[in-house]
Length: 144
Image 1 (tube, helix red, strand yellow):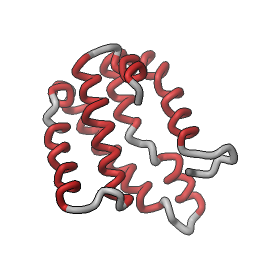
Image 2: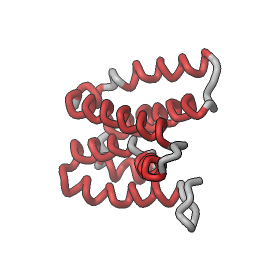
Image 3: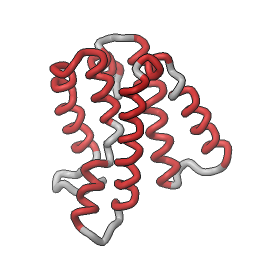
């Protein structure tokens, strides 16, 4: 995510921007790299676990613990299904996995709600969802 988008999502709240840009986004990418086999070896995997310690003790996360914890659990649960179903022989499971593989954006939704309420989150999320789709699909709608 670019800086201007993070500023818009977080309404320039420094702790929220730090959490989203420097911890959440990085953590999600590293977890995905572990799952995909791109982040291998004990040092790289353990550095992701060390990042998790920082993420889950970040001041913004702790200030909004109940909402953040529930969101993180829901994202983890959804991501587990996307991983399990992304290569399924059942078409609806593959489609479901494809459309939900950006479930980490649900944390963006939670942060936008915390920082600016429902109307602010509604102003941000359609753009986020469209961008996630278009960045990961070709013109025919095939996942890339």
